[in-house]
Length: 453
Image 1 (cartoon, helix red, strand yellow):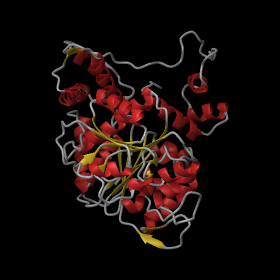
Image 2: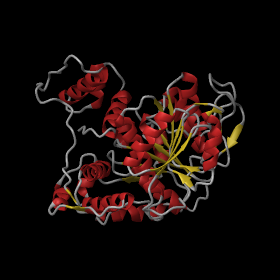
Image 3: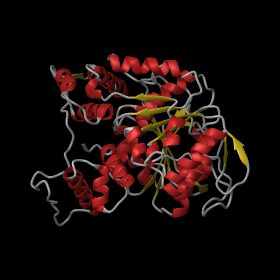
Image 4: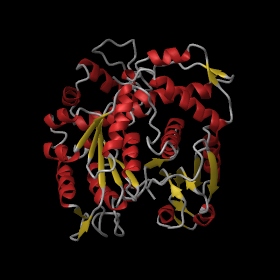
């Protein structure tokens, strides 16, 4: 159910949310919140009720509780007559290691603990909506928008390499659209299998092997049955490995063997399973520098980079920012049934802004301005929140009573990064953590809408 068919709905349709939860108050509140974000919502309070929605053509987001009156929420994911699912989130009030392990070993994208903060829920809704938008975009470009020379060259390269079986390595800053490019490669490849996306930096390292290659029953706590990993789920299709440099070195060795042998062995198993998968990998780092720093094995780099495509940052794409902003506004007007437009002069401001968060930041800025404007003309103010307080000096860290541990950790990270001129390696050494931890923390900040150099 983690595949990517052409969605049987119009591109301007509202994204859909199915909530399966026996907490009626939570379900109603979540549905109201989602509707305010442009979603069409459906509610079920048991497994039996959820089966009543099996005729829906697609569910862009499934929010699933585990403890239901007539069974376990995981049972729903194993049923064959469920609608096509775009994004799956487990939302539970009783988290455990066993359920978390089972979640990441299946098609679950998010594992969240109640109560959800508005920021958590908004982020979840936006990620699912972005996935839905990508899946109904132009079949040739997978929703990639741009008339600049850099983008036209990129799209031409994708069209040229897509029909081959060669591996592709995508690099570029965060927010430049690497997953959209990977989807374009898949759509133009002619491969009949699904598109399966895996974020290597978002999965616990000790569970990533099971996530990718599957496991046999009893291979670890919570492995109650055999599970086919993402390689098998992507059979005859495309496997997108995002943040490939966050994969542990030992697992990179096994990945290389799988790619070269064309077969894999599940965790805890002995049987060789043939694979027929086209791999597209991505990183927001310079791949050669990642090789030099030991974050990416050199032999794996050459195996992945049959074709290496670098996605251009938005600041180097001329007036593409205007085209993307117009398309985003058009999508929002279609979703909410409105006819809003940009205030005169807005497009000039958008084109001049450097957009350090690239397309993701631009779309978020337009979305935020759209939702906070009550009249028909919206004004987009570029520039996100800067997290380091101005009152603290360049080498000082400002804490105050009432700050959460997360806020203190964030403050320390940002000030240490600035002190070492955003050198991740020196920052990690100073804070006593791994470089991978620094990159993951920065990625989480950016994903939550914060601006980090």
